[in-house]
Length: 477
Image (cartoon, rainbow, N blue to C red; front, side, top):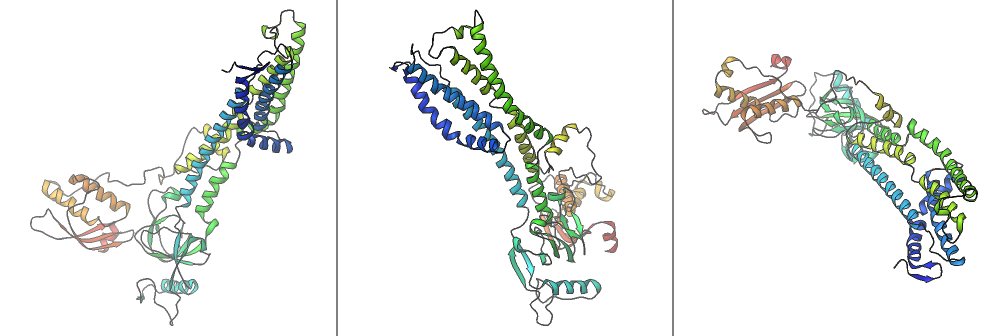
């Protein structure tokens, strides 16, 4: 029914195409008009200018062709290209949609980075008094002080200095004394004033092994405390923390232009006027050739409304439209955005588009001795048993049962690795439990564990006192 003639020169198909194209051209395409106007206003035409030029030329040429067909004989059906305008805007908008999706994925990665920090923190009401008391304790380490409550040091002179307050992390200030219990996330950067522990810093530094923290050691916000309890003085809070700086680094990296992107933007500034000049030259060249050539192309010989000038205009528009969906202006920003986003999701922080571009020239990667490129989980590589336990299968299984039970309460990576090895030797599923009882379990942070265990497999129900740890710990006990 598209060929249905409504009046001389006006066809139903062209009217339907016009009606359907208007909302696409001026509705969906409105953002391109606004962006193109702003870029021209600032004297730096972008790819949006080409989009508007190409689609607008296609649309208005089609409208003009319809008018020429109606007003001038022989009233043949006009050669409209409404589909060109519609398809260009649709495809380019879809490309922008994909680009925004990539940005959304990057934002999620940044949100996950920010979520490393806890939302709440426990502090002392009077940090100055607490720090002075902590310093006094450090100077007289042999003096035993018994706290009146299980939450902190004894209150002096009826003071409420050691009263604990739970506050949002955003309200932390430099100088506050924060209480960190086993398994807590550290809310800000600071230095230890009391206590000793191991901290898992892998999510920030990539260090696979927990790092021991003693008096005066620095801690990083967003890292996870081990089994120890400690207090630390806040030295950097809010946007000044190392975690916040990492997030800002990723955000800046996504907006920093890579050298190739700067080249693309520079070329875009010359690309727009170049295409316009080429389009104009195409129009003028074919206008001259259509009159000079004795046998011009068949398209110029067709008896249609508008004659040769309409054909030349269409060829001119074809050149402009051909350059419209320019990959040069879309590919580089999208590549930088997606690259930094995917890197952040996998724990790789890219400092900018320039760094991302330089990685293509990397031929060798050098890692330090700490081996930060690991799964972060230790495993037992070798075990040596004395002949008494090794030569008898029942005794060998009993040995692994005793060792496994003694490490069941440990959160240290070495302890977890030993427990995993024990389960493997006993044929127990990693999620399963070793049968037996454990009592008098004590942990010496960074040194070892002490426990009284009773394996369920032992027929005589014998209890074994186990000491597991480093050589110094074993010698002292």
